Image (tube, rainbow, N blue to C red; front, side, top):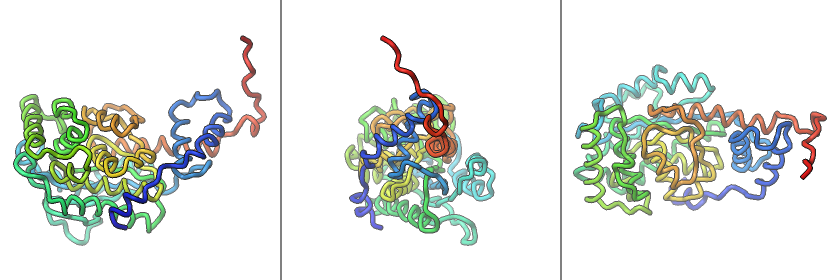
Length: 355
């Protein structure tokens, strides 16, 4: 389906099921609210699936990869070549995301959105390459408007192609791309109006002088390009990345098809912010997998209106935090569907307390 059709077709979750789902979780054999956020997750999953018995069967992780022109300015602790090297590591099942997906029974897919390398045709990668990396946004806009739209459309296509093979119940969004924390911080500053000094972190582990340089370059780029804070495509084309556009598109498609979405760290969250600016109803389907050490993520999550499920002091990306959170969300669904109610178990409910 085309981008505009997807954007227009996303509906809010049905509030009519909210009260029924809340009542069901309240009547489980426990004090009300004693399972904390797990109960909120169970209710949200019921609303997403429009079903009081939410089920997660097909768990999917998509890792979108692309290179960034800004990387040539030395804003990362690693050279640009690491993007393609890590893609090969993903394909060889050697990265952290591979380990965590195996552990949690998640089907992983690697997508080339714009890596500056020609991968052979006989490897297990989804080829959606738009260009061999973006332009250096400190000097010029990251991409053309046509390529920005194409990157989002390509993310839509990835979700729909995978969903046709087997219906996806929950999808995690990961990333790979040297330089992409600079792009993500720029996107978040552009959308929220928060200064780059408050949204820009150390990424792969840069030192103080490189961090100062990174912040200054983002400040200069935003002043030069003046992205429209209300327009996701305008922000994406001026300071974004192809993998970030792909993540945004996958989110839009998942929400259109009423599939739960789990975002990861700051890059995945920047993609979610682009999707949110295109249609803010996506918030109803989004879970923030974890709180990233990267400082800009919080500002983006606050604008979207969601809170992270986990805080493990992680900043790797790849979808690692999302993969762990998917397991938590699945557990919440099983609480909703498998845990006995007071009536089922023959357990007395709480007595009315005397005043």
